[in-house]
Length: 202
Image (cartoon, rainbow, N blue to C red; front, side, top):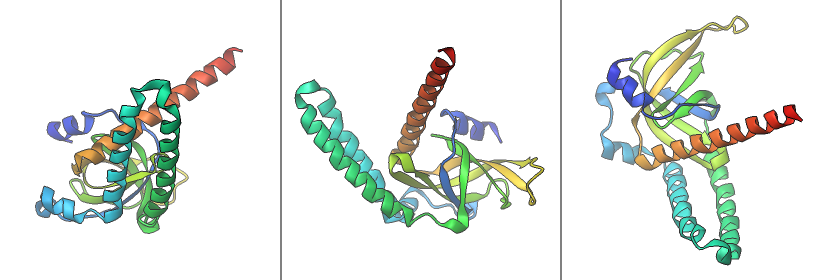
């Protein structure tokens, strides 16, 4: 991992948490699409999921400033938002390819780490789908492998590899979604630890 790659990968906090992902070999690094070409590559369901999340954020943000007076309307809109989340989850399930499915070890706004029995070369460009079920959303991006390590797992029959992947082509809205998902999950983990400590001290 060179210094530029490391800085880009570590620019954002990495959260140790498993989310479902699809990864498969993409184009050669020299043939990587530019931003406009990448935008055209993104499957429609991923664009739709991103746009729906943006609408939801913009819709609910002004209502939070109005306090309790507007609470019934806010509750109604949250219920409608939940219905949309359920619909989007169903649509995105169809994009999850079991042949290329694995899970992250960690993820953040700069990229993610995953393990696989499949062997990829350093600097390989991967076609990636990350599914955030708790956020009812998913992203499509191109990642570049910047670090490869062997994983020593005795009970595993096949060799296992751990890869660090930096986001090479990703929409900024999707990067923000990854950051929000990691912060949301981090707050849940911290709350769980707090409750465990309180339970142990009782």
